[in-house]
Length: 223
Image 1 (spheres, rainbow, N blue to C red):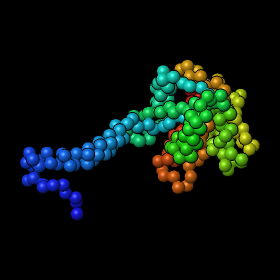
Image 2 (cartoon, helix red, strand yellow):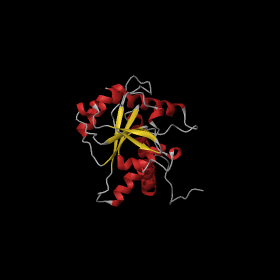
Image 3 (spheres, rainbow, N blue to C red):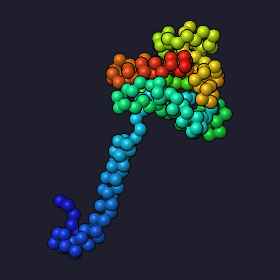
Image 4 (cartoon, one colour):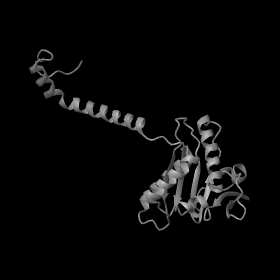
């Protein structure tokens, strides 16, 4: 039985409203705050820009908003329209990491976010410093976070430096990548990787994202 405070006036009269506000003000404010928070979250999800592909960078460099904008404008037309909304859109996500990081807690947080991205997110195309990539190469091919070039590369990479481990090539060095150089995005001494093939329990959309990332990677190398 709900607790009652004093004599309750007739509902919806002036006295009743005063009574209600006196005894239930904080209850009402709390409920309103929860409803507002839920509504705001739903609104954000509905209005947030949807991306077909995510290009993830992890390394010591930091790319300004101007460079990121040029990357999005240049690469978006090369993506597949996975959500079939009539618009091709690429997002650029960057994780700035370096051995000289002055804040160990920040560096740990960024490393954890990157690890979760590789393990769980629907992000399949990565550009990384060699030192960062070494942390995800695994003890053998079966535990490597990246797919070997033989599984996805169709572009001609004659003369390009590759990142090798376990007797396989996994990444391609981007110093002479014309597409990036033309827009002033300096990825020299960085390597392009494709994340491992989606697990068997992954849904069709994730497999399509993987294939789309492969197509984009090959376009980047041949533009």
